[in-house]
Length: 208
Image (cartoon, rainbow, N blue to C red; front, side):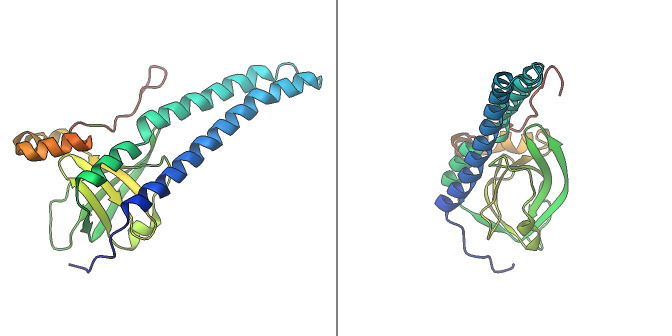
């Protein structure tokens, strides 16, 4: 097996991802505020009175999607529990099979494996900080993993401190493994918040 790089600092990883999350929140709140204020400024300046009919609903949509992203797409809280419950293990190979745009964020299909070993589950991965991008550094080597394959866990990309929350793409397939896990493993998964399927696309306006 390849010699793993130095294990990342959990504190630094969480700080790095919180920074991106807070930046995302601040940007969306600022945009919503601008959309709410522009009609007032326009009205006082005697501009088109129809402007509020467009800006106010747009601002509300920005806030609604922000709430949905934070509720369904941000997994920093769970990731923190996982990182303090499970040890970090190095996976020498990261294989990305594809990505999908979802309301909760870009969802990536990945496999985390060790060279020479087979049977790594296909995982559903989403950036814990709501950033919509795949960390390119992951393609240059392996990644750190904390968790249990049948339940899910955390993937950390060396060098960048980018963190993705992962769970089995086919959750039902690994139900027998979860059911047969010993009490300690089940208790650990429950403590870490990964004993149930978390990544479900939210229903938007009756769709999804």
